[in-house]
Length: 149
Image (cartoon, rainbow, N blue to C red; front, side, top):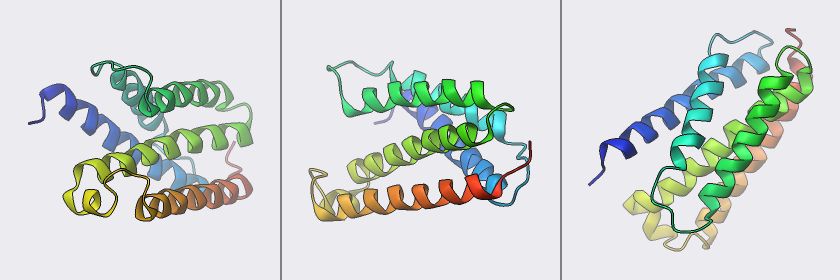
């Protein structure tokens, strides 16, 4: 059974992903998104709250959380100053959120768990590969299209 802390963490994560997709849409349409602050701060909250789950040594989740906070610090610094750095760093942070969403989906959704119980099977690898390629493509496109500041 999920505890309240887990539910809050998941809700924050889903808000971060949804608002991040709105920011990505703004980049692709060359419009400033009103979701930017929400995306950045909920992504910070997602990473920080992830550190308060029971500690069982350094896990991939902890590594992703640390890397996410690093790229978020860069995104906050670059916002309004260095357009390309801001776009890339914020989209890397969004990618990390989606990466973890895919991992958690394969762990928690029975149909996906059956396809890749150890997450080393081809369905999991293909899903993560598609997400990576999609984000690389969309981030490159966003860098070319977004000139709002």
